[in-house]
Image 1: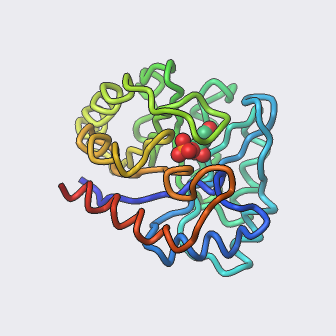
Image 2: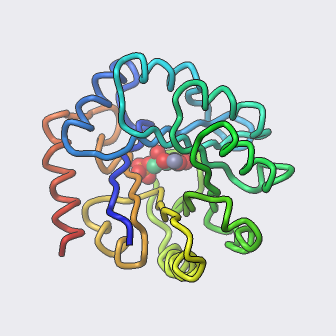
Length: 227
Ligand code: DX5
Ligand code: ZN
């Protein structure tokens, strides 16, 4: 199985000091930057777009940027994110008119592609596109906000997705997003995830983030996963 990646969601970072926050969390041992894009249409919240992704690259961020698109329509924003330096681009199948075409568009732009599954979205969307995904992202909360509680039914869904990936023989990451913290990350890993998004679990709530704590939280997460 692939190595474990910790992906802080910058949704919970202090946006007024975003470059510094990303530097701090990467210096504390995070592996990739989870970048939540919300459009106030597909989800009831509005966040950041390609300009901010580009600004992080210009700031000097070299770590992979994992762009989670919660937008509808999807396709027209993909080239902009590719040009802005996205590494992964994932989208929700319900938000695309032509899922196979969108997956091909992402890879065609030179990025890694992925599908995102809301808590009630079936994994059967993967049936004919396993060869076109580099990442499967399971939402363990309904998308739109940080700081929600992990929905327990996701554990069984993770096990199902892990079986599908292993049976496919393809090199596909299994990412989990929503309510992941140091106290449940071991259970999430045991169910099959290898890529762990955590927003409030790392940055804290209500913009009370303390960069001195990032190091100890990420260490605590890795220790929990090591058992
Ligand atoms: C929710 C976003 C998540 C969110 C996770 O729609 O996709 O990435 O920031 O935040 P926490 O870890 O606080 O649940
Ligand atoms: Zn996300």
